[in-house]
Amino acid sequence: SGESWLVQFYHDWSEPCKDFAPRWEALAAKLPPMVRLGRVNVDQNFGLVQRYRSFVRCRQTVLSVECTVPALVLVTRGDGEELHAESYRGSLSAEAVYEWVKRSLPESRTRISKLKGPRAAEALASFLQPAWAKATAGRRRAAALERGRGTELPRAVIFSSRPIADSIFARHLATRLSPLLSLSSMHVDGGLSSSPEASPEARLAHSLGLRSLPVVALWTEPEEEGSPLDKGRSPPLLLEISERPDAAAREDFVA
Image (cartoon, rainbow, N blue to C red; front, side, top):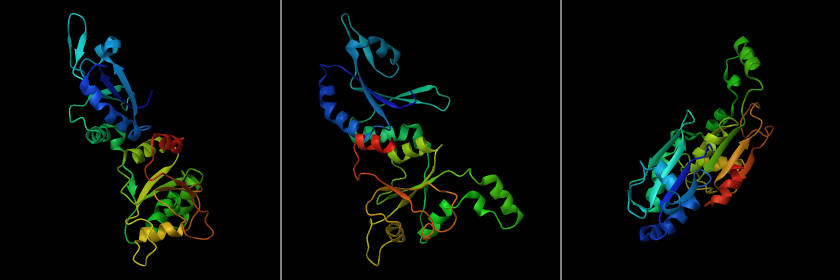
């Protein structure tokens, strides 16, 4: 499949594998659906162990095969659809493994634009503006309109109180949804504060009707012109993301 997999090779009787079990469960809560997890019992899957022998250190005894476990291998699909495998050699803490996976995924090359600055509303309006609407007036604008009308993708912005653009989940969304919409992000520093000192991003979020964070605001009519705050413009569809989404919540959101 086109999915990425984190595979653990283990022995049932191995004490290090038993010690690693709670950390594996923690990874199972944090990584899907961006990365699927699977376990391979070395004693029952010698053929698969042989296939990945470059990544799993083993030695053959008279009666069995003994491997240095737990051994973690990340299997991803490259641009040319070929499979790429990489073994993990660092600390077996859940945090260290998670950061390694985050760096190693193909999605790590995906960059999500960040809308920021003192004029948050203007930055959002520029992102939402159809490409053909940015053309100059007169014949050039008319030609751009004729070429571009009906070709614009919906626009979506992830509003979050934390810098979410670099998260695995956001990059996974951007990669998976890239044929369907254009995605950006806005960091609402300090959250949805309603105080007079609230950030421009917080004031913008309030004006758009956001009541919690993180949220994906989706504009399904990208051909509309004007400010996102214009009363005549269609309001965004707001899709809430749990503050600490589990694997099932992420699956449901992506679906």
